[in-house]
Amino acid sequence: MRNQIIQDESKILLSARTKLGLTQQQVADEADITIRHYRMFENGERKLSTSSYNTARKVLNALELDLTAFGNGDYSVQDAVEK
Image (cartoon, rainbow, N blue to C red; front, side):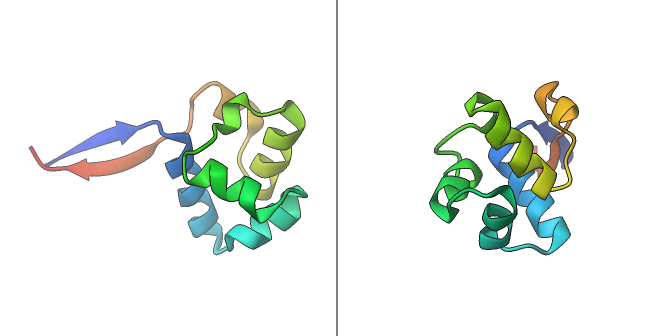
């Protein structure tokens, strides 16, 4: 078994939200977007990195993530992968 780093925006959002103990609705409310809009980011249907700056900023603030670090790809999720 080895650790593989996955730089997947949707998993990063899910991980951050779970760590904070927030629901999708709470993140959406804090970011002032619809729950549907947020779910699309978290489900991988839309990329936060290609959304408007303002939307990305609000979502990342709600998740206590740094906008610059996110944009630079500095966040990752470690996933155990058996080999």
